[in-house]
Image 1 (cartoon, protein in one colour):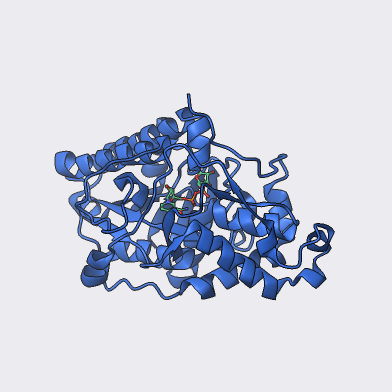
Image 2 (cartoon, helix red, strand yellow):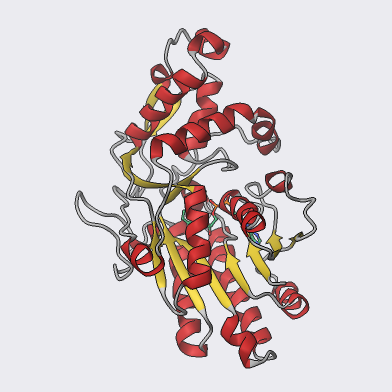
Length: 361
Ligand code: NAD
């Protein structure tokens, strides 16, 4: 039976991916996760009892531990999702981003290379190293155009720079050592189990608690959104059928300004949890969640627009996203409203959704 090694499998996208692999294949899943603030056992609670799943708490920067896992568990491949992921946090403290995102990926590549050198040719041919990256490595678009796989890298934040460096290393291991690597660059994800520091869950939780809904700058920055389940399907398509050495953009052609996204969330919330049923909203004297919208200082170096051309994955692999934004947002709102316990435990360390990432020097 195949073993898939999924790093960062206790995080937002990782936990959704683990669930999908267990539900749609016979594979064993070995999750390696350091369990930072964003990665939690609770994200896998419903599947931890599955005998095919094992969670190893470890740091991908720990070469010895990673080498031992490759040697002992002989995975058919690795999907590398472990990362520090919040742009605002990368502005306040870039070191952890370089360490995990860049050096951690390097340590995984070296651990995989060392192990592959001891295996036979069939195992080397079958092996895949899928590195999960972001469209933010391409920098910012103006009003027109789309990121393609051959768009030059031009990252703006310490987060995207650390991811960009890792992407280059992964491709170099294909060209230099012949490792069967794959890189995916995906647009913004949303869905269940996302830590409430990111725009969509932060807006939902603030709204439910009757707090201000912060909108950076004038809200005109555009993001391209994909429902997390669609991203996970895309990752498995690339893992199973992508051509070694190739890069694939993943996205759902769903551009929205941040203002539009928050407004849509407010409208969905007005239906799912109307003001009359939410004392916190009434206490603010508000009759709609839109009344809570507040414009705040912009993020330094805030990229204006992201938009992904995912036609290569569609044409080469048949990848098509299935969930439209309004459906996905409604499911997401309903999940957060129904899972208040998860929301509380995610913030049990004292995280209270403060404004981050304003440091400019
Ligand atoms: P997340 O922050 O929710 O999860 C990251 C996971 O990595 C957590 O479980 C965390 O504990 C783990 N981790 C962090 N440092 C580690 C280390 N040193 N060793 C082992 N584990 C470690 O992030 P996410 O949103 O699920 O993103 C997953 C991946 O997808 C990241 O690589 C990210 O760059 C990429 N990505 C995310 C998005 C998005 O919109 N969320 C879009 C495109 C690409």
